[in-house]
Length: 324
Figure 1 (cartoon, rainbow, N blue to C red):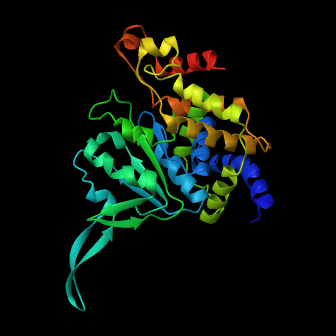
Figure 2: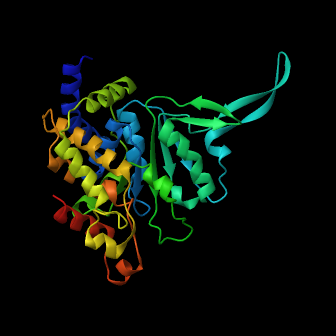
Figure 3: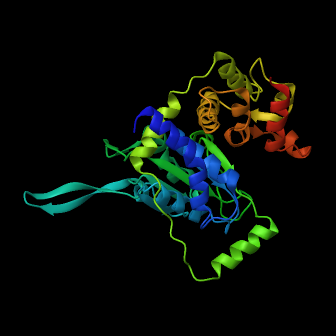
């Protein structure tokens, strides 16, 4: 597709994907849109929610709609890094025995890291290189991952039994932390009616991997004024208690704030919102719309915040009020 055709396809993709996913997913429009924004910018998503909220079904359905190779890893306490990346094994060949690399499940296009916070940090770290550089290194050899490549990880609330806190370096590599919550009563009734009746809906493949790569290239061409970029930078900087431009609220309640990658994610995501709105430029409201999913997992509150009932969501809302 040329740029004009790619633009038209991307603008129309929003409604088409919602309509197609609506065959199997009830509600959760904001969740779907945030994951789509991450995909269209080449980012990764962390999806947080209690068990049974269709997180796995949503990711698998997106892979079907985009005709991408779907792989799934169930994270457990005994999972090892080699179970994710693959390993060299000794095999017999025409010239004798030799070490052969056997790829792990990470060699797909859309990887579902299911319940990622139920495995220790050592195993979680096996995803770091893949998420950032789209490659894995095994026994000193680098192996490129397929393109496009996404990690969509699900995690249970950290208060649940058998969960581990994700390291800050791991969290920062997720573009968004998407919160999936319980549905309203009417939508939950619809879910029960659908899932207890004979299965009938089949998802159609609307796009291909090549379409996704074309969308990603188009998104990066959207111009952004220096004023809007500075707003994204100041929004992230205001969350850092140790920085000169930090808000008083951050100095009081935050241990660690968002880094430079947060501002990058705000601008990239805002470019998608601009295209969806039919604009060829980014405005401040595009940035503000993504502040919560970009910042909520990058801000670490202190004990004072916990004692006074300050939440990350409330803190992000305060930042949006103060930073202009």
